[in-house]
Image (cartoon, rainbow, N blue to C red):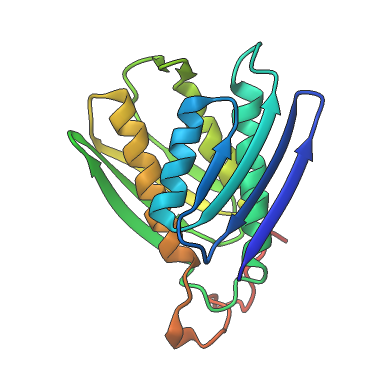
Length: 198
């Protein structure tokens, strides 16, 4: 079982996360931000990751620090769970529809952080959640996991649908990338023989 557990404590937040890459999609997430919890549930359900997230942050100011620190901690936990990345598919690619919205996600667990992002979310908020924080979440996640991540919106008019389609596509692409490739027989999926952030 590939597990990652991270505790991140700052003056602004106290975050504890764990991820089991070989889980069944059990989600237990409480960040104090209901919409973020809903998106983390999508990540767990469609990625088949067991996810446990607890966050206490300065959400009386806004959701920015908590959103960021949850993503940073999750990215670190993912990198920890992947270890040397031997035998994995490494690449993931999925397009997810949600009604009128369609989002395509391609990722590479390369050790090199990069985010290409072109979601055009029409409203400033979904519920109380600031939609600018979606890009920030994925940037923080990519940075700390060492992931090249491209998120492309192909269609969509409803903010909730666009964001949820992005998280579903991300979950399925990540599931594919983290799964074992039987033909690889445990070797590192790189011509360089190493996949790391170094």
